[in-house]
Image (tube, rainbow, N blue to C red; front, side, top):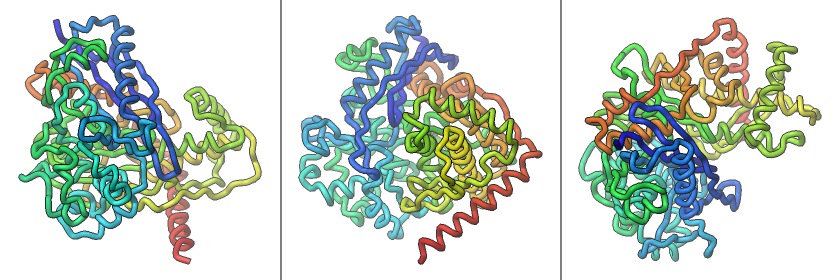
Length: 523
């Protein structure tokens, strides 16, 4: 009986695959690294063929671990970062730097900051649905950059994909694109026809984009199939040909589906917000009516559920900042899982010894890769105050702890901005790699004052992608029914009121540092 699903999640550093039952139980999860080239601090590039190979390796390994036969798989779904894959007219990789295979501009790449700022100066409905700004992490500025700075590649461009759409193309051969990716990263409108706003594309110099990039006029909704698994893809993945392939999803949106899929979103007195914490962090709210606010990406209609609007806030470097702190300190080394665990364990001991005074003189503004929300300024930089000559391991632990505090105070500022704009009070549903960091889990409740629901026992991003696959495979009548059956509620963590005064003081310092940074920038 075909009643299991394959879910594939491609992040910044790896591809992960899970085998999931129709009730949402994750039977096995395997991971394989992917290449990331960093030609400069502002640039990041992937190799799409390397990514596909990593997906295939991870799927085969997960199947073997679960002990599930390929014949038991009802469908497969893919989610991925919003990276931009470039292919030539014959479908071959369009490499950015010669023949090295790097044909994909990573989501974290900020080479198109100038182009993004140019978009933000326009008065157009597209901007109204993107918080009055376009992020350099979105695809349109990157395509503007490509046409402007690499006209040789633009002339050879045959198709451009969001990474999740590339993966479904590899799986099926179908050029279909996802409503999830197009509405959120390509300025496509899901709430009106035509979806492409040609006058906007004309104004930003992409008048030929739709034809040049092989983009369709219609997009496929989440929970629907883009086609069936081809023979070649089935052989590569170790699956049976002909099973449905669900439309691709943005990785954070798959996480939102995984944690909110079984949640009653109709309660007017409580706003459930998905928080996906990994290399970066995303906050995602689903609303019955459109909601507009500066720096919020959206509202996007149908980006997950067909009748709801999605708005997104975020932080560009959270897990990435902690990795940077570890890597750049004399006592740090490579930011492996074991190394993070070693630091976290020592922090727990030092906090027990020193109490609330631990690391208090260190304050961190976490904008080391710009500020996504609430300022929408890719040029902002991070700040550390209170450093000494301490180069010891305990000194690293103090800095790491206070970087965690700074990250969560940045989230608190986003939460306060949402509340002022009418989205509040919030219950945060946390998933992603941050669930494995007990410091962040504690701080997300204590320093924000929000109730926190933690998806401890599963991988909500993979579950969200499995929900998408289950709906596409017809195991449930639709996406809502699949979500209700498969999403895991998680455990509730409530704030400790005894900690409020401490983090209120930290937050006052945080805001003061932002003012001082602005003063310095103005001199």
